[in-house]
Image 1 (cartoon, helix red, strand yellow):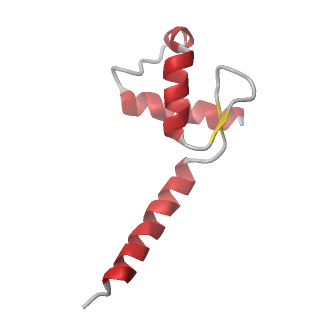
Image 2: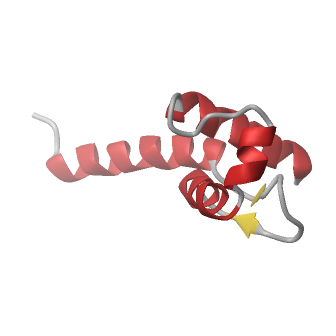
Amino acid sequence: MADPQQARYTKHLRIQATTAATDGNLACPFCDRRIFHQADQLFDHVDLEHPSKVQEAGLNPRGGTARFRKLLQEKAINKA
């Protein structure tokens, strides 16, 4: 029988590995010197602070949230 604590530890390590791969230093692609450590923080910032720039870029945060987040994250990584 598996140790419950070991199972939780293993699950945590898996989550940590995927989070580390997707999060990090994400620079806002629309303003200078704004760095975020999580993709959700970047998404919220861009959604609130730069709605007109998002529309100009042809991105739709409401219509395709997962696609928008992925594109935003790629832009942020390329800028950083």
